[in-house]
Image: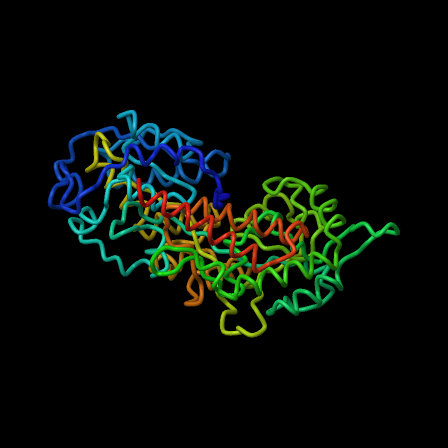
Length: 442
């Protein structure tokens, strides 16, 4: 599964007008047991974003196993569904019983507006022990006291490196080591154009968005009151100064020419898989893509390098993942909860999905299961997920806007179009805080 954060605002603007406060009491139709004890035959609908053949097969296998355990529940699925379709279905009064989202960016909005039901009553009724989930997961599955979605597999981000191009060098642990290796491994032609890049520092490069790279310096996004911490946290200045310095060594125009010549991130033409980039930031799913499309690639994985003055951060990384829940107005909430609970808490189900999709299991028992396939390159991401220094972007009502605003500022800075970094960061704070004031007034 190629889960990634989607910086897309489609459908979110309409949510404020359809806000609905979900109570914390047991939802109508949820029995004390939190499931379907009468076992009457029922057909439920489920929407998900899977579309690739291997993804669909893995998920269909998981649903077949669910059917064996809950033979009275039939699941009718719709594939390749995006968040805006889920939103519109709820607003139109015709939602599915269960919906799955590939992005955590919308969780705060989902919870605040009641697009997804609060699941805490279901968890309590079913006596689910929430300690089975690593603590970091709570930050992206709930908002303002409401857990409206559950985690179904997780994504972690690390460093991939081409062993042949590295020529025996160890993967870098610090930003200065990454800089030195990136320069050493870069190959140019007689015109100075880049043929092979040791590393592409541009924030526009695939998974190099600040939401992922910020963990390398321990950067904070928000203050406790929800306002922007980007301008006041020196870590962002540290990160963006390092990036621009390395971009300057390549030459911004040369680097952009190279970047724009590269193949599609999600295809077999991915430049790391083609040997055009020696080191790259990517998620755990790249292991499965390499196994499918670049079987002969000799590569390794490691945690992301960190700031030289913050060695304690090494071993951690950015965490996010797929989330699943019960939309408001679902026709069969009891059976829907049986499916949600199964896909998010059943150890064998999570392990089977992880083995097939190469995403990280999202519960501690699944991480420790002897059935989990753990080759060294995948083990890196399991270790990152379990590392206490790993972090996520806590659910925020303006999550998409905040990320877009910072990335736009970073592009202006690294391209040289905005020469004053302090001013760039201050402007970013202002835009984010102004947006927060508007949202708070909705």
